[in-house]
Image 1 (cartoon, helix red, strand yellow):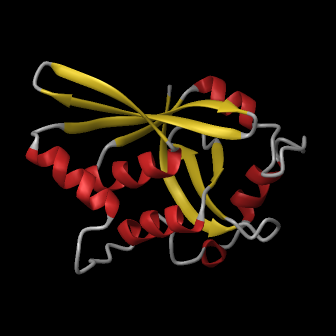
Image 2 (cartoon, one colour; image 1 turned 120 degrees about the vertical axis):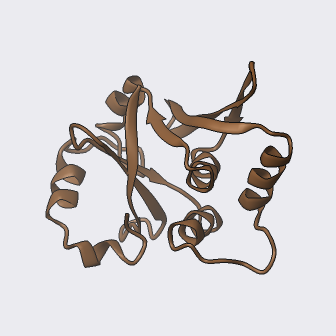
Length: 160
């Protein structure tokens, strides 16, 4: 597994969909994950530390886990199948542990709120290197080159 950090949240100008950009803390490998508008909003709210008058869904889940004295240990983006990412949330309470299936966007939103680490399986990184949002093959270094050259202001206000 490779530990990742959130590099930013931006709009893909081609698909007009939000993209969460994860980056390997060591080698600088990028992993773009296209998410829905509502999921991006849940991530952005936490990135910007915006307080809401009532708990949002991911805040509610974090609060329920806290009441049950359970902790989010980490999330793992564990599979890429037919251009769809899959994730798992690793929970623990005392000596008990659970692994819960999740969409990556929900897992990331919960990880941000829980201060949990984000990991990606190496196999997922390998598979993602040649895919684009539309599933067609591409130059595997195109996105990396763009992200390395992009002006930080181009990432929008949702960058880490």
